Image (cartoon, rainbow, N blue to C red; front, side, top):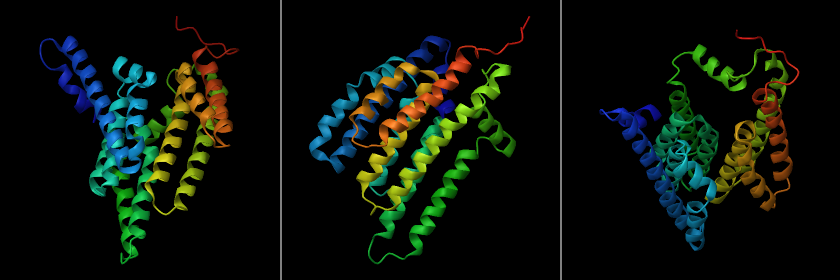
Length: 284
């Protein structure tokens, strides 16, 4: 999906300059799309806070720097995530899962939100009077099958899927002798994230299908995934999740954020700082 979205920037004789302008414009369009969708969602859930939420997003320094400034394609992924949520609230189930699939085709991190959306649809359908009991189950299974197939279609075969997983757990820039030293830290961080993710989903399963728990849990899962990535590659970004964790009244927030940060920073020390204590063979 990202290749198709970015391809127009390579057309024409002035492909470099035009490409830069096009990609910057695409990021800005996604930024304003996120702002509009966020305000629409808040109007449906918490209308009194809609304007406040809009300002908190549009004037957030990290959002402005990373989306409008650096032009990262994460903002394009997020506009599709918000579009999916907005469509869910309007009960356009098929379109919602389609938007989420496009989001995952840009960056796979949005896959972590998929179980939450399936649970929300299942609870909404199951809670309606007169609805047949098998309908939510069938809808849930079809959604899982649809998105699962769409996620793995770009890879076509099991070997490619395994190679993608290996690249995630064993980045290509790891020094040859350092792989075994940081693999435990990397695995511990991913495992901790998975445990918290499962617990949060379990809590959503105990709910009645209201939209606010979906939003709260989706935010927490996304925040922890951001901690996972920020501690691994862009440590200065940690100021944002650490600040949010400090403002949270959840007792689990600080320990989880600190543990994820410690695990991922351990990986970064070994990888980015040349794996202290490991002799790297000379390329010459």
